[in-house]
Length: 502
Image 1 (cartoon, rainbow, N blue to C red):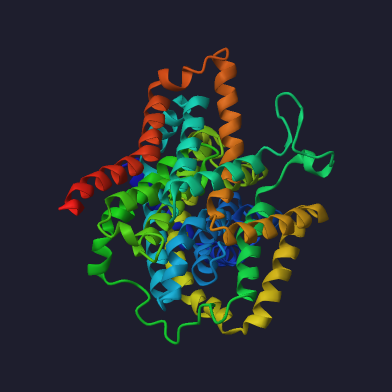
Image 2 (cartoon, one colour; image 1 turned 135 degrees about the horizontal axis):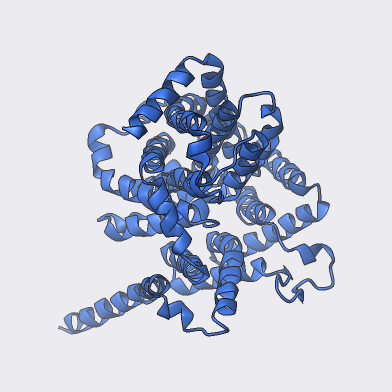
């Protein structure tokens, strides 16, 4: 009854405040814009708009920020599908099947699946947030550095195995990405690693320049050497949303992926990239159409988008109940809550109960706004495909340069971005996928930091990773994911050999 009463009061307050509703929708629109623009992120959007919320009531300000958060997670699928350029790191997995669907003339259908699964994942996140937040957050606190390191390793193995091609090439790409992630000063010893005497490299390679360089620049360079390979804008947006019967075929995948996103969002620092990776892997394992994953399977789009939107609610659980941000965006929200006089933590519901329920009610309104804004905005975003390539490619290149420079006002970031872009282009010519490299850059620091923390806590005892039950279980799953596909392939080959000799 406390939940019902709290939400009733929250919805009553928001419905009596037209300004609050308009600001939530405004936040979703801004979020879509940031998510749909490569180089801009939800973190950047929240950081830029927090100063504009100073005159607003605290609950209204945070509600607008949450609208921006969920909107950006959904908007990242637009360039991933249309241009094969993910708007956010979590949309990398969406592009694996979204863009092939667009190349088949199914851009509208791909986005319809992405939008509907985004809304479903956000609804699952919202229900988890209002019902099981405290017990799930307490469970996350019991996980240590060994568990986080094991999850990061699992994510790296999964991306190496789900990318089309040989597993060896996938592993090579992952190793390259992890190698890029360790450039800079060692966080414990202070020793310079792979800096080549360059002062700028001592601070390491930032994620966004690496993402833009490895994903955007190779795609732009490829477009210069290929004829008529760009996706044409669809003439009609009819049939965008799948029918109820079609949705039922992906219902289990959507719900499972949404809960995976929630679970991964609760674990600080993991975020949407790991959630979408694991959800994609599970979808591929259980789907009868698994051979088409990476070639335009709707299930891949559904898994990725449901998971990375499930992360939004999952990341808010430790923020509101324990004061621990689940990712970089919720870290910004933590600052916004503090600025507006709210202290996240176990006593938040006691000291600011009405404000919290207003925020939770606003998240449901923002989720509904995703569907409305998404269906409306796609009509305009899709027009970018009608721009001639000789105009679109330079415009995107300029946007990549400007966006990279704007991240830290450092020209060296632009140099790194362009250097990785050329490297990524050469890697694609060698049939090495750049997606595992990007995931390696994202998860590499998490793997190194948490693994070293676990070793420090255990006095250098490596068995801590297998003696702790949860981390041992995750590592066992990692080994299965790494070797099982090869074992099955060898078994099938041996089984087919006697038959072929007959």
